[in-house]
Length: 257
Image (cartoon, rainbow, N blue to C red; front, top):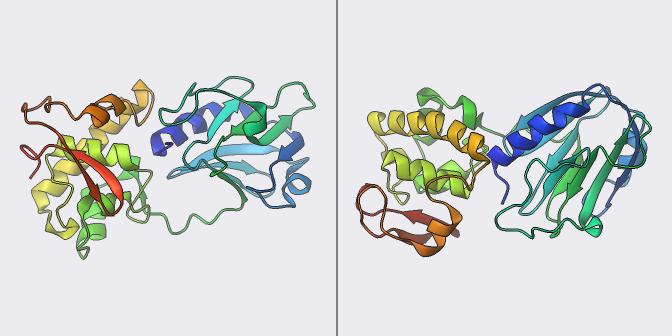
């Protein structure tokens, strides 16, 4: 499912629309405000930002927020920056479109399409992102220590909280804890200074690598590894799959403490 890395890939692709005017639009009103089309038609795109897992299309009017749910993806000028999401259908069916934006009078191919077979994504006007924590690419030891110091919940659960770190999802959190050698069950506040620094260093180093490879499924704990739970590449101990607060955690009981 889309995480902050996928949102960043789509943000970069959507920068191609900056400077264009939205000449017409269509939206599935089950996922967007009823006034959406009338509000955005005629607006010019001024910038593309990302807030955690949400892509923000800035205009000379309201901001358009795209949240991708579990299976949503973006197609820009007919090209898909991500061809297929690992846990979604590989097909691109027109009836799965939830948003189409046409720019500069080109009515043949939508400049922006949000395609989502499960209809769990959302299109918002001026979405509220004030509750988000520090962005995953801007994480620091101080910000993480401050966010975790009073939390008794599992460190995995804490890192999935978008108010703690915006952009991290289930796959990336497991990957960061695996590289950092931290048991995902541990209470968040139990991490000492060295462990917190090590985790932040891992986030800073590994997220850009996964981004270059193509997203959250491109870590060492790939979907195939998560399904099979083979011996850990780092120590040979069988990986384990647990449920923590309703989310699947794949980890190594040998080197993660």
